[in-house]
Image (cartoon, rainbow, N blue to C red; front, side, top):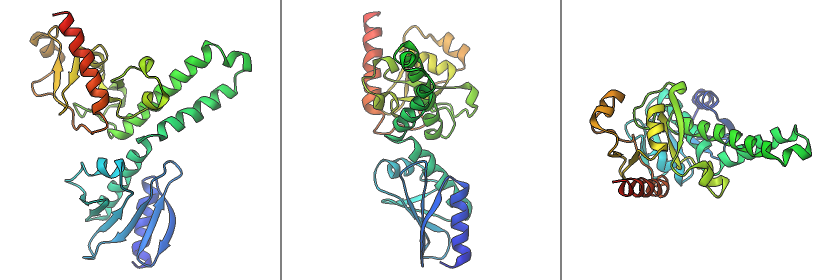
Length: 258
């Protein structure tokens, strides 16, 4: 890889949330202060495009969903253009910031900074609990915005002001901060779907199809603009434990009320 090619990789990295960790004769390794992932970028063997090696695990599983744009073999991704390389690095950085347990670390740091400004006696009161909840919900929303690419998990609407961070297992019912802030414990939804999901008037099957409570009639669906075949854009294996619990609550509520 010549110096010009390396400069293209470095620029793509800087533009998409990465910094240079090291350079070799045939590669550039990128890292970031905002997450723990690394990316080793080389020119493709064909001389056209780039190959990007990322750590194995949840990050590569999530990136492999985007098969139309990035060809994946194991934990190595191939991009055909400079623009595609930038898109891959952007997706990877966004996902790396959301995967456990970085949101929890960001939450703890933000809470500590706010509580530092409070007196010791005040910090032990209801104020601390309110600070923790507010900061946590902001961190969780930011994580879901990153994970879902700033768009609703169902409709694809990408207007942040219309989107809500919806928990499958409610914040108050989580026993740990790890669960409260887990990006798989819920979905980024437009406001009316968030209201339905939060009240267990809607849930999703294991493959992502929306299921509605009997009280949500066809007339109500038409008024809300809900069409047939509504489903999640994708479902990860990480979602299923939380989603299964949500379906259980949904079924118990509506069987009881049937």
